Amino acid sequence: MKKRWLTVCSLLLCSALLFAAFAPTAQAKGNSTLDLPEGVKTAVERFANLVIDVVNRGLLLVRYPWGSKANSTVDLSKFTLVLEDEFEGSRLNSRIWNHHDQGPRRGGYWDAGQVELRDGNLVIKTSYNEDGKYGPGYYSACVASDYLFEQTYGYFECRCILPAAEGLWSAFWLMNKQVGKDGNPGTNGTEIDIFESPHWYRGKTGRDNSMITSNLHWGGYSFQTKYRNVTIAKANNPYEEYNTYGLEWNKDGYIFYINGVETGRSSAGGVSQVPEYMMLSVEVDGVDSEPIHGWSGNIKNNKDGVLPAEFVVDYVRVYQYNNLVD
Image (cartoon, helix red, strand yellow):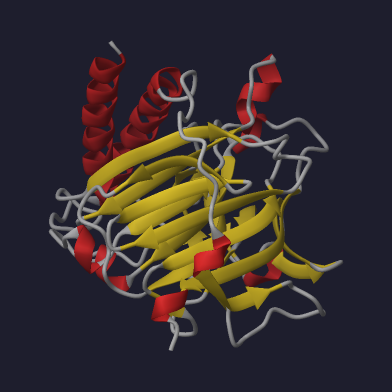
C-alpha cells in the first residue's frame, strides 16, 4: 500500500511540476520551452501551486509516519573541514556569499535589506513592507555562494532555527547553473534540497509540524523536469531550537542527515558529478509577487505579531573527503 501511494504521489507531483514550468523558481533556470500569454501562465502557476500542496499532503501521509529506518550517523573522520562561516561580525562575508536574484520572487520579493548578521548568526527576515524597494509586499531574501565557492562531493551542514510562520519556507540547498537546462541529466547538475521547511502551518491545528523535507530536482524547470522526494523527517522543535541539517554527497549518491543521524538517501537522476554552490533562502508561497495558498499555506493567514519571521543560521560548514583534498 505504501509503495502504491508513493507511486501515485510521485506521478501527481511530476504533473504539478510540469504545470509549474513557467513559475518563478529559486534556481537559475533556462528559457521555457513554450511561450504562453501572461494570463494563461499565471493561471497555470496558480493551479500548479494547489496541486503541489495536495501532493505534499499525500507525501506526509506515506512518508512521515514511517520515518527513516536508518540509524547510521555521519562519520566526520573521513572528511577535512574546508570552509566554515560562523557569521561573526556585522557584514556578510563577501568572499563566500552574495545576495542572490533580488527582485520579484514567487509570492513576494527577495531583497538584500532583509539580511543581517546578529549575535553570531545570519538572519534572513520575512516581513510585509509597505514601503518596500519593489513596492508594497512580502519581502525575504536569499544568499548564495555562486561564483565564490563551489565544490563537488563532500559533506555540507548548517545549524539553524527555522522561520515560524505560515505561507513561507526556508531552505539550505545546492545548485549548479546547468540544472536549469531542459533535458540536462542529473550527472551534470542536480538541485539538492538538503532541507525545506513548509510545514509550520500544521501546528496551528495541533498537528506535528516538526518535520522537514529533502528533495532532488534535475532535467531543467520546464516540461522535462524530474523530481524525487527523498525523505520527510522529524527535527527537534525546529522553530525554537537549533538543529543541524547535513548532506553527504559522493559518486554513489546523496545521504541526508538531521543532527548527524541519517534520514534518507538517494541516487535518483544520476548523481551530480560537477561543482555546486550553496544557497540559504526563504520563499513566500505565491505567484507574480502575490501570495496564494500553497504547500506552506498562505502568508496572509498569519495573525498579528507572527511576522516578521526569522531564519536564523548559526553556522555553515563544508567538508571534503580526505582523499580529495588538494
